[in-house]
Each structure stands twice: as structure tokens, then as C-alpha cells.
Image (cartoon, rainbow, N blue to C red; front, side):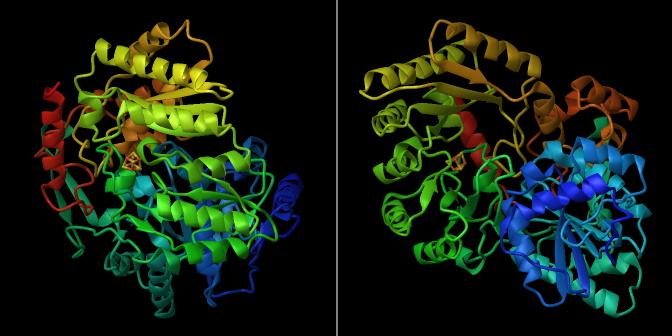
Length: 572
Ligand code: SF4
């Protein structure tokens, strides 16, 4: 049963109603379906509403006759205060059902920085935070998303079952297993988890026990309850079988416009060594043009703005055909970042026609040793060519993505990076178009699990900052270049949690209500007897990594690629 008006704070109710009534698109209503699901995004509505993962699961689950799935977001600061001080439990927006009363609570978690919000939402929902404290009356708490797929260990204590890989198919199996378990009289919770652990792509953290040796290094991971020793990633063969497209649009999300997101490709074949999109996602696949056009046509009555989601580039023949067909049916096409070496006139023209004023390209590192190390096989000339195409097409601004903190990086590498930035700036000004701002986003290298760089040490934030300052100093007299990076607290949290183990669960438990500063995190680490440095250090190639239970590339493949990369660092 949903909460009544009296039980919900009137302002929260009005807020939710206002946001829901601004949405247009697919609407599903609760008709008392047997299985009730809460789809949770661990951020406020403005950021969570556009989440394609939430939209896709919302649609897939609500198409089942036996299931209703409602969405729930982190309350914003005013709502959060109300939830916190009253007895109002967090509820699903569509049917005002208390989250603690649903059958399955599923979190979609895109980044590690959201982990604290998962705990906050569990608390606001009045669901026991730790899995071991939940019983048969509690919802089954599951989670999925990129960081869950490559290393869910820091959340191990709080999540009952993790989806490893792509959720579209396995979510149906999870619901079915839950339903059967319930029909058979809800035996123990352990029985439910045991059944789930048999599904391909489901990891039940409580069935695995890391055994630690010296210096908090894992010696081995023992599996219990006959859980598989390796959990295999799940992936769908055919993108056309699943419409990964916004279910609804709203002008009230962070995008300020009624924009549809539509995934046209998944996975990337370019294999840049730091990139989860290439190694974490099993295989590169593309949506057919026919299917894409059909999905867009079905939605043109509520918006014409279509953002195409893909990992790296749109191949030229596909781009020409797709974009011309999209324009022919009246769609305005937006694209994400592009690969400079394969950038083509169709993509540039689409950006120009959409009125978007900027295009993003990613050199990552200066040409030569470091760019070879990360396997970014693009030349400086390609970036200059992409710059000319962009400016001449009337797109005034360019965004560059760069990484600092690669192994063996020196001051002279920073100087080379600055030189490339200057060359691109000069090209913008001299190629015969109206040039605007060159935005340079510089982030630290986050060595991600399941990539060939998973063993690399992450550079200290102090070193990162001093290299960034040096880059800024070299460029300080250049006009129309803007350099930015992520806040250092976010870099710390991401670096710590992305390669963290389940001991960090105690840290999350201490920190989730506190202000997210580096000093608070460090204090929480010390209080539970952990050293921050041990999480940023280089790992031995034969070390048992916290995510060792999860399926990876063919055994030894990543370490061979890592070794190959290191050889490239030696060459000039
Ligand atoms: S091209 Fe982009 S998406 Fe593809 S592997 Fe490289 S960084 Fe990742």
C-alpha cells in the first residue's frame, strides 16, 4: 500500500508531483502487481532522471505483467532534512510506496562517489544498512552499474546481490527467482541468495570471504555455499532486442531541455589501456539504423532533440546513413565526445545543425611514449585536423580531455602536453572560422579494475596538483584556454574506492553522514586501522586483487597488455 497524504510531508508530496507532471513519455501505473520493485538512483532527481539504466529497467520491468517498478531518488537537501527528522520513509515516486515495503530494491550506481548516497538512501528508507542484519521481511537489495561490475567490494556488506555486467536480461531472471522463492514460502534469506548466486552475472558478496595476509594484502578468496569460484559477466548479444532509450523526458533535469538519450553502440574496440568501456564491457556492438529510427519516430511527438550515446566514435558509413535519416524525420541530433582520427563531416555537420557550440576530443597524453602506453593510437595531426573541421563547421568551442599521472611522466611530458594544447589553440584561431574557448579537462589517472592498468599506482594528489599547476603556468599567457579538473575530494574518493576491498565498508559506514572531505575520509580510514596509501599503491601482478572473483579477460591477457604497455614506456 502507498503512503497516504497525511503520512507524507506535504511539501515533499508537492515537489514530487510537480516533477512527475513535467515528464512526458511512457507512464506505468501500479495495479497491485505481485512483485514490487524500487529502482533507486543515488542522486537527486535532476541528475538521476536522465539515467538510461533507470529508464531501461523501468521499461523492461513494467512490461512484465506480474511486476511494478517505481523510481526513487536521493531527496534534495530540503527534502532530505524532512525525511531525516520525520518518520516519513523514502518512497517510490510513482505509487508512493515505502521503499522498505517493496520486494526488490535495485540501485543503479554509475560512479564510486555515489556509494555514500547508497547508504544514505538505505537509511532514509529505514532498511537495515548491512545485509547481514536484514531478514525475510526486508527488500532484497541489489545493485548494478559500471563500478559494481568491475569492483563492488567496498559495498559488499550493504548489497545482497550485485549484477555483474549488463542488466537487461538478468534482471528478469532475478525477479523470477525472487517470485519462485516467495511462492515457495520465503524460506531463509540465505536460500534466496543461494538461488541468485546460480544465475550468470549475479555476485552474492556474502558468499565470498577474502583471507588476508601481511599488510592487509589478500592471500586468497574462499567461496561458501557452493557459490561459483568465478562470476561471469553478463552481456546481451543484440542491442536491437532492448530499447535502451529514455522512457520519458523533462525540462526539469540538469539538461534543461526535453532531450532523449538513445544508446546506439555499447563497448569499444579501440582498447585504450585505462578504459573500462573497452575492457569492462564484453564486446563492441551497434544498434541497427532501422531500430534506431523506429525508436526515435516513436518519440518525436514529445521531443525532437536526440542525444546519441556511444563510447567512442560513429563509423563513417553508419554516421552518414543514420544522421541523414534522423534529419529526414525532423530530429535534431546531439553527439558526445568523438575520436579525432575518425571524426567525419556527417558528425560535425550534425553537431553544427543541432546548434551545439562545442565538440569534445581526447588526446589524453602527449604524442609518443605516454600516448603509446595508454594505447591511444591517435596522432597530433589528427587532433589538428579535427580542430579545423570543427571550427570551419561553425562550432566555436573545443573540449580536450587529458590525463596526468601516467607512469614515468616527467616535467617534460607536461611541457609536451602544453605544446599540443597551444597548437590546437593556434589552429582554432588560424583556420578560418569563428573560434571560441578551448576547454581543457585534466584528470588524474584512475587505474581501474579489469583494465590492463589495474596494477599501476595512482599518483598522489599533491603530485597531480603540482603538475597541473605547472601546466597552468606554462599556459597562463595564452588567451581563451580554460583548464579545469575534478575536485580533489572526488579524486581521492574515486581512487580509493575503485580499487578498494570490503574493509572499506567500515569506512563508508563511518563517513556516509559526514561532509565528504579528504581529511574526514582519512580520519575514517585511520579509525578503522587502514592506511590510505595502501589503496593507491602499485599492485603486484601476481597479487590477489579484491575483485579477483569477477570474470575478466582471458587469464593472463591483461597482464600481457600491461607488460606490453610498460615496454612502450621505454621507447622514445
Ligand atoms: S576510444 Fe574512448 S571509449 Fe574507446 S577505448 Fe579509447 S577511451 Fe575508451
